[in-house]
Length: 387
Image (cartoon, rainbow, N blue to C red):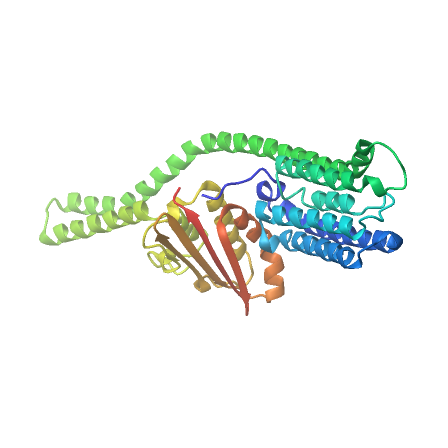
């Protein structure tokens, strides 16, 4: 089962899709600021190669943030954060080497500030503890780098004062990002808790009505097939061989219906209630769902909700042909795999934008989700553990 981390992106995948432009702007802003400060402090550069390498590394770190923040690559993992952070710290080290022996002022070093900006851009995507912890480790590294540069600074003073001046901008931005992440996550969890409580209350209220509905369905079957047969037999007061054959046929039909209902998965029930059986063919949903190992019930509640939302999204598109929907589920050891293909009568560009929120939710609850678009055909491949 996919572990949901305490991040805004994973707890609220749909709401976080609009945060990507902010991350892009922050990453670009950090690089532009670094270039500006490098040009402004050109006189302090003693090794242009390392100064250029520092900018290149910062550009790489920013590119990782831009790529990882895309909803099409969600969720942004701890590995992506670690790569971004490590490359940004390496850029700070290269900046220091590029100014080694000639760095006159700490205040014009762009490294700590740009690292803090990148951490702010990662706020919606990573847990607060992770951002704060990585920031504290980086503060120690920046402090050591600053300590060894103190002898060449123009202003004299205790090393601790320069270290504080160097790490304060980064720590301020880092802790702000961590607090923002914590606050948003706490708010989302509080809302989800209230929504869950309301949902459970609604289920209790509807349970009795659902039970009556199921009972009424069974009574309808009896009224339609069994009672007329009994009435005819009682009216004739005789039992013939034809009556025995008819009774056997009715019993077999009822038994088949009951077995199919018991064996039918929630996914097949969903499709049938959504109108898949528009031709009134028995078992029409099984023509769409290929689940020989019966692994659909292994999905968690969150995974079922994501699949249900996706299928409802398909069914609401005008002109969508249900015969062009195919769901294949299979088992491989302790892992289950799924493939959903749908021919949708809209262009690929509209298809991507329309289903971006649905795919964001699925990426949050499924493992290794791959989405392929081509000629109005959407293909989704995903996997999940046995619940």
